[in-house]
Length: 155
Length: 289
Image (cartoon, rainbow over all chains, first blue to last red; front, side, top):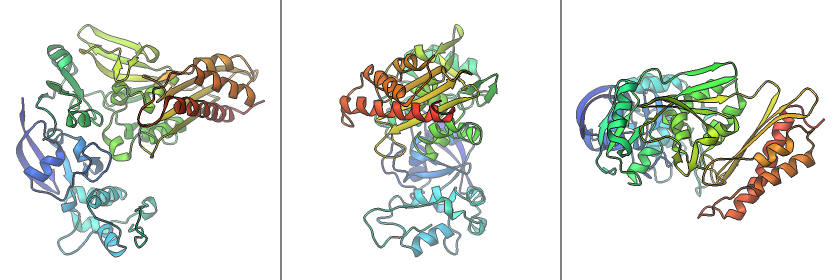
C-alpha cells in the first residue's frame, strides 16, 4: 500500500485527502493543503521550525508521516491569529522584535502556544479568539536569540 | 518526498503486527514514535520495504508499577513517562529531561528509544543500570531478554527481525538507594558525547549492598561499569574509594573516537562522570559514614 486516504482536522477545518504514505506531515501541510506557514529547516527534528500542535501538543511535523495524522487534530501557524489581529504571542514577538530572519518563528510560536494549555486547546479547536484570551504563563518561556543586541525576549 | 518508497501497514492487533513482521522479515521496520526512524528514512540511511505502524495497537500504552518493577508499554511516549515520574522518581525525571526536546518526547517512545540502540542514548544505559528486561513477542511466542544480553553493537540488539518489543521492565531502586546521572553533550538535548548513570544501595551496616553503574556514549553499546560495582560492593564507601572505582570502570572502556570527540577524551570524561554520579548517588543514600 503506497497511498492512503486520511481525514485530518487542521485549524478546525476537516480535510479528506489521499496521500503517499512516505509523505511527511510537514510536506502534506505545505504541498497538499497549501499551508506554507509551517517551515521545514533541518528535516530531521533538530531545528524545530516545523513544529505544529498534534491534539494540542507540540510535535515536529517533519518527523511524522501524514498518514499517522489520520483522525487527529493539527494546529498550524495559520490557525493562531484571529482574523482581526495577532495572537498575544505573535504580538509580543512583533513588539519586542523577537526574531531575526523569522524563518523558524512559526515553530517557536507554536511551541510557545503549547505553554498555555487553554491557548493550545483553543488553537487546536481552531478558535483563535479564545486562544487570544487565554492567559499565558510567560515565566515558563525564555527565548534567546544570538548575535542581535537589539532583540529582547518577546515572551 | 525524501524517504524511498515503502509499503505501509497499520495493523489493529498485536497478532496482525507479528504476522506482518513474519511475512516481511528483515525488510520491515517497526514505526512507533518515529523520532529516530523517520530521519533515517529521510536521509535514506534506512530503506525498509515495509513499515509496520504499531500506533493503532491497543494495550501497549500502559505504565505499571508493582513490587518494585516498572513496566512501560511499547506505545508509552517519553513525555508520558516523564509525567509519571514527576514527583515519583527524580532519577527518571532527570534522565528523561536529557532525551532530546519536549516536542520529540511527545512522540518518541521509551521502548523505541531502547530498541533503537543508539550507544549514546540515555535510556538504554538506564535500562542496563536498573537491570531491566525487554519483553519481545514473535511468531514463537514471548521471551524476556535481560538488558545485559540485549545490546550487541551500535543499532543492533538481540531482537530478531520478526520480533516486536511490547514492553520494557525496569527494576526500581530499593528504598534507601541513591542515584546519580550526568552527561556531557555539545548542546542540551543532543546525544551525549559521554554519560553515566549510577545507583547505590546501602546495607544496614553502612556498606554498599549493591552498586550499579552504566555508561553511554562510551563504546558501541551502553556498558556496565562492573569494575566500579565490584570495587564498591561490600565495602564502606569513602571519596577515595569512589574515585578509585570510577577510574577502574573508565579504564575498562573502549570508546570510539569520531568527529565529535576522541577516544581518549571520552575515556577521561567517563572517569569524571563516573566519579560524579557515584558521589551523587552516595550523597543521596546518606553520604560517607
